[in-house]
Length: 168
Image (cartoon, rainbow, N blue to C red):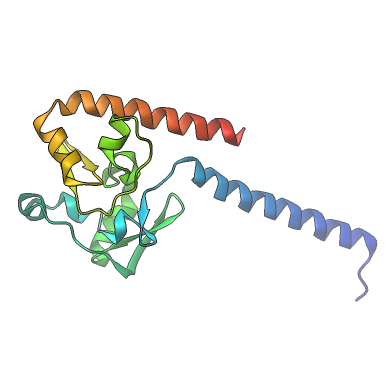
């Protein structure tokens, strides 16, 4: 079947629309950054496992496995089991740490986005915060974590707003 100029034009336009749509989706995910280490959010730790009472009491981070992943915010989040992956998929906002895993102390100290590996963490109130180093976690434990949280929230909001402006 010969390709007519009209058919060629239609195919080109459809391809352009598809490419634009895919690019928009990828770029939309880039607006909200995610801390990754070793190619995975949270350094490959299971975001659901932090919330387990036994893990919280033992202050243990659980490694995820590449066999159990969920795509969220443009990244493959790893989990220790299919049950954890399913819980996350049903309600990711309930399990993603504050600032998508970036160091809370760095944000509160106006140091910007510092990645974490998922091993230094703490719950303050009912929210999970990750830290680059134990020193930052201790600062929050021994200081006014509510004030630090407000400072980090403001810094995070500013980062998201500046990324949104870049999109426009």
